[in-house]
Length: 359
Image (cartoon, rainbow, N blue to C red; front, side, top):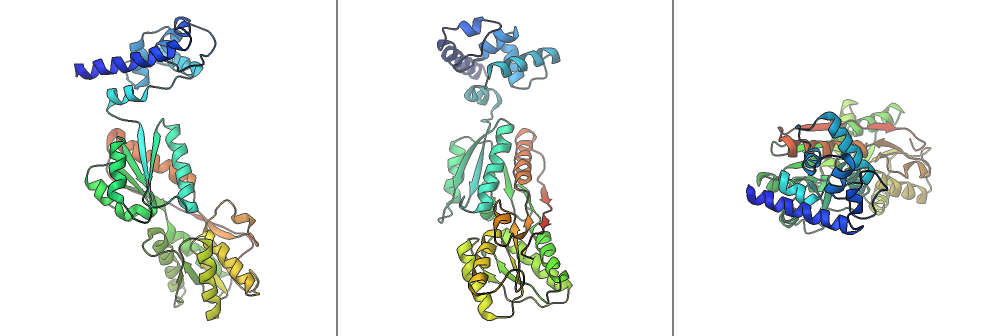
């Protein structure tokens, strides 16, 4: 333990010397004054707050052994100076890197890119950095988690398309939160109730008088796609309707256009539920190309409520996922596991239908 204490003091001393070197140490010796332009050291905060460096260290590491008034004074000094804790020193002291990983099959899909943004904002608000790894077509899950271990992450968030690949890493002891996955005792799960959203969308069309609802499904192997298809089937079954054969896209607008052409060629379609908004966009174009009108001839509902959904022609009726809440909850679950290792759990957020002009 003494060796680690010595290393910690050396790291902090290096950081302090680097900060003080930018202005000859004058800011560290001045109790009040302008905000320094270089890296702010723990010594500068101590001088500004009128406390010892050890007290600042205790505040940074959330030690209970600090008087509340003193803590408030140190935190005010940190805010005034723009102090950011030295990450390497904190890692030595706490055994945590304050970095979390994100694993995704791809960031090219709208859902994954929005989730990454939400996770990044939530992590930053809690003082955590991100290390992002994508699997690509090779699905190199072992390599992905090896890279995260090499970077010393405290845990990782796995986005939906990689959920089936997370079990190996969880079994090896890495703390994980998986977005959109079946329940699993080896990690925590946060997700949208996709089946519920699909049921609402399908029921909305049936209530409007359509005799059946065709489905433009997502790719095989996607948990979210399978759940949305399940909800569509359940809503039709509840109404005593045999489901038409679904067609399957790959989440892209191009695949939505191609698969909607297949549905139109088969005939008989008057209402279409697309498993995401991008495929719905392609379907809208295919319907227009066929000389049909939305919603007069064919009603269309999507899923996600992407930023541009209201700008489609016509504006798209869709099922809204709360990506911000998903990201915040995913980070909150992972941080809780990192800091106290609670039991595994599953949380589902309920989406809602956003009614516009396409259905």
